[in-house]
Amino acid sequence: MAVFLGVDVGTSGTKTLAMQEDGTILSSATIEYPLYSPQPGWSEQDPEDWWQATIKSIRKVLKTGKIKPADVKGIGLSGQMHGSVFLNKKHEVIRPALLWNDQRTAAECAEIEQRAGGRKKLIGLVANPALTGFTAPKILWLRNHEPKNFDKTVQVLLPKDYIRFRLTGEFATEVSDASGTLLLNVKQRKWSRPLLSKLELDESLLPEVYESEDVSGHLTAESARLLGLSAGVAVVGGGGDQAAGAIGNGIVKKGVISATMGTSGVVFAHSDEVQIDPEGRVHTFCHAVRDKWHVMGVVLSAGGSLQWYRNQLCEQQVAAARKQKVDPYQLITAQAAEAPAGSEGLFFLPYLTGERTPHADPYARAAWIGLSLRHGRSHLSRAVIEGATYAMRDSLEIIKELNIPVKEIRLSGGGARSPFWRQVQADIYGQKVVTINAEEGPAYGVALLAAAGTGAYKDVVEACSATIRVVESTSVNSKDKKVYNRSFPLYQKLYSSLKPDFQQICGLLDER
Image (cartoon, rainbow, N blue to C red; front, side, top):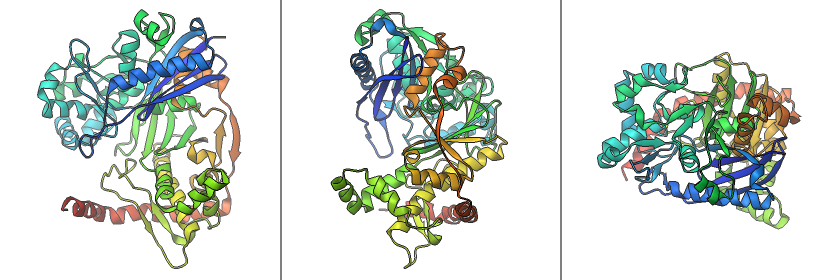
C-alpha cells in the first residue's frame, strides 16, 4: 500500500508522520529546535534548524515505520503561518526568520492601513485587517529598519515553503498559507497586485501560488539522498497549520466546524463562499479544499490559561498527580467539577497574552472577577475553564452572524481529551459536540492532501470521508446551558468595561 508523508514545521519542532493510503498511521517523529527573542516582543528562528529537523524526522519515521523509500508516493507540507524567510540572489537566508508571534511591526501595520486607504479598504482588498503577526508588515519592517538586507532580498517565503524549496528547488506556496501574508486577494486566490502596488513591493518577491492538493514540485536527487527517499517524489501544496489541521479533523464541507482547544484556541468554519466580517474580527482565508474558504477565530490563551493556572497555583495537585502517576489536569478538572456551572458568579477573562479574536487588543489582560468569601479553589479552576470556552464562543457567535451554518462541532486539542471540558464546551456552545478518530493535527491533514494530490483519492474531501469518522458525542445539559446563556453576555460586557483600564495598566508597566 502506498505511503504518504506529512511534514509540519511548527514553532517548537517539526513533526513528520507516515500514513498509509487507508489513513493508518505507521510512524511519527518530532524534532525540536530553539526560538530566539533578541529583544522583548521579538520572535525569530533559524530556517536551517527547520531543514535539519525535517531531515532527521523523515529519516526517523522511515526507520521506525520500516518503510521502503519506493513506497513513499507523496509528501505534504504544513507549518506555522505568517513567518518570513528572506533569501538573496544566491538563495541564501539573509537573516533569521521573523515568526507569527513577533510583535515588532505595529508601526508597519499602521503604514499598511494608511497606504491602503484605511482599514475598510484594506479588508476589501485582502479580506483581513493588518495584524502584527502577518507577513506583509514584516517585509515592510525589513525595508524600514534593515534596508541593506531588504535590498539583498529577492524572495520571501513562508516557513513550510522554505522547506519546499530545500526539497524541490521550487519557489512555491499555496492558497491557505498565502492568505495569512496579507498580500493575497482571498476572493480570487492570487496575489493582490493593487495592494502590492500601494505598498511599493514587487510581485517577484513572492512565490507562485498553488491549490493545496496540487503538485508543486518533486524531490531533487540531492534532497532525496539526504532524506533516504527516492528522487522525484511529488510534493503537494499542503497548507498553513490551521487549514491543514482542519483537513486532519475532516472540516471539508458546509456546516462542520472545529473547535481546537490547545495552548491557543481556534474556531474554524468551512465555507463554500467567501464570507468576510466587515469589522475584521475573524479571519477569512482560502481553505486547503480546492475553491473553498474558511472563517477562523483565534483565542490566544485558551488551554494556555489552564496551563498557567496549573503552573502557578496548583503545586498540590501537580505533586499529588506525580504520586498517583496521573495527568495533573485530571485532578484539576475533577476539582473544577465540584463547583456548579457558572462558578457561582465568578468569571475569568483569559487574556493572559492580549487577545486576537474578536478584540485584536494586545493590551487586554486576564482577571478573575466576582470573587467572594464563598469561592474556593474549585470555583477558580472551573472559572478558568469556562472563561477560555466563553472566549471560543465569541468566535462562534461571529461565525453565526455571517450566516455560516453550524451543524456539527468537532472538538480537538487538550480540551477534547477531558470529559468534563467536553461537557462545558457543549453547554457553553449550546449544542452537541463530537470527537473523531484522528488526533494527529496538521501533519495528518497534509498527508491526506498528498494522497489526494497524487491520485490515491479524487480529492481531499473523498480522502477525509474515507479516513475520518466521529467516535464520541457529548450532548447538552439543558440546565447548565441556561446558566451559561445568562452569563455569556455579562462575560462579554466585562471586557468592554475594562478595555480602557487594561491600556492604563500596561502604561504603568511602561513607566517603570
